[in-house]
Image 1 (cartoon, rainbow, N blue to C red):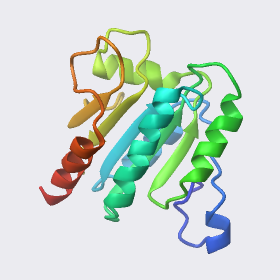
Image 2: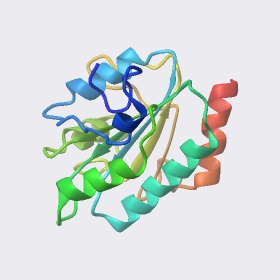
Image 3: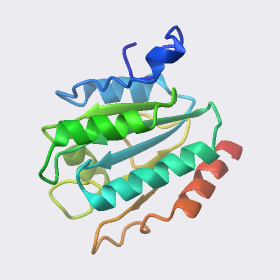
Image 4: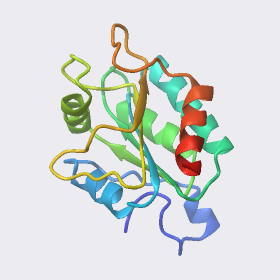
Length: 178
């Protein structure tokens, strides 16, 4: 399918290098999300040069290391919210956590942030530094449906709690047990 880490025929050495598809539009992410129906899905929209987003990513890594269930899929979309070496930082972070359940996407046009802003209604131009959980039955038709649960690290947003790794992990485990 061409998604990072999801080709079971790859050699162990090849799986260590993550190839992020260039996300010219949201269709690749949408296709992966729909193809993984029946799985519990985690979506994170992050800026690889933002210190808080990098901290959030480290929390998602902790969550995925503690929840090793093969019924989990994660999609990390890298958005250029902050300046700096966007491509290099995204590649470095993606390569730091190769996991067959995780796909990474570069979104230089911030399409995912605009899309999820319409879904989450954070009252910003774009949604970013957000961590979303979708159940196995979730569908993405014209737009993704609202997540079953989400957290964020955005000042002034009160529609969801601020990211807490223990709480997020417990919610993910609960969705798998439910």
